[in-house]
Image (cartoon, rainbow, N blue to C red; front, side, top):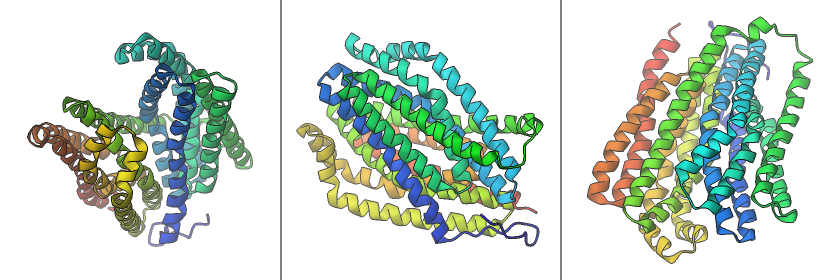
Amino acid sequence: MEQKAPICGYRQVPVTNRQILAIAIPMTVAYLTTPLVGLVDSIVIGRIGDAALFGGLAAGAMVFDFIFVVFETVRSVASSLVAQAFGRGDSLEERAVFLRAFVIAAISGFALALLAPLIASISEWFINAEPALTAAMDLYIRIRLLSAPAALINYVILGYLVGRAEVGIGLFLQLLLNGMNIALTSFLGVYLGWGIAGVAWGTICAEVAAMTVGMVILFGRFSAMPKISPQHTLNVAAIRSMVHLNGDIMIRSFALMGAYILFMRQSAQLGTATLAANAVLMHFLLFAEYFLSGFATAAQQFAGRAIGAGDRPAFLRAVRLTAGWGFALAGFMSVLLFAFGEQLVGTITKATDVRTEAVPYLSWAIFTAPSGVLAFQMNGVFLGASWSRDIRNMMFLSFVTFVTALFALGQIFGNSGLWAAYHIFLLVRGTSLLLLMRRRLRTTFAK
């Protein structure tokens, strides 16, 4: 993209509704293809008709998701730093950020692959399920973790492309990855009869294929550019800064997952039906998050670009426009879910007692979309600006507030109290970062 010349000491960054949508819409489509993979995996194993295999897949996928949610931070950090370099017009640093993140991802991925037996053993101990389910989970984890290097490198490739606002290529790679995943898991798992091993190997093949195509695209581009020195790429201070950013975002991810686990744990204290009902209703929050993540990604890209360019007005425009689109989409989703919420609950579960328990709390789940807009959007803004310490600290504040509300309100109001506490968690996450943003603006754009 052609950049305008700097004016008044900074580079001007155009931020328009069209540009916001050009990033948000493709990334929303890309994010929405991800849950389809898990759905197809479940259908593939479900056709075999073995409850132990189905449970083993669910448990193994949960372990894998836990690990990769933590390591997905490499994508967010790469995207933010590339966007800042892009805003400065520093193409050399864009490549350097990619290569540093690539090295970190590759080392982390190979470490996870080597530790697969240990991770599988720890997971078996933690889940403590019947032998047949444990054996299926163990097989899935040991095979699936072999894809860790390719999976983490794919995060870096996507982060680089999003940081440069090249979301078309990013969408293509995500569709390739998820499309091949669906096709190969179905072919290997059902047609060849490999079962849960086929599901895991199908995912590995898809990850490797997407990584290969992505690397061919990027290194074909890099080969036509001026060479970058190893000293620049392996700059110790820059690598240390990247690792520090990853650490802060990892801590934030742990706290986020801890809140979800605590919510489900307290749901279990109210009975099996309540636990199952809340698990169903949580799909509404995940559905909202997938839709709103496209605008959070746009906020991250434009905030990072504005920070790199030193353009405060562009930063504020990015915040204002992404917030406007986010609230508009959340409102539309709430209306849609109010109209079809009960039917969706019935689609997710056929158990009558679970549906009966879930419907009275449907409104709590539906309103997680507007409650979570600021949380998702501000997280994108702060990631783009690399204000990772603030993300970490405000997540701690939100988590402590959530735990306090969860036990206090849950004891008084039962399941309604649990949902109220989760809304408080979302609201505190968003508003705390919004209030802190004013102070950060004064110091960041002090020049």
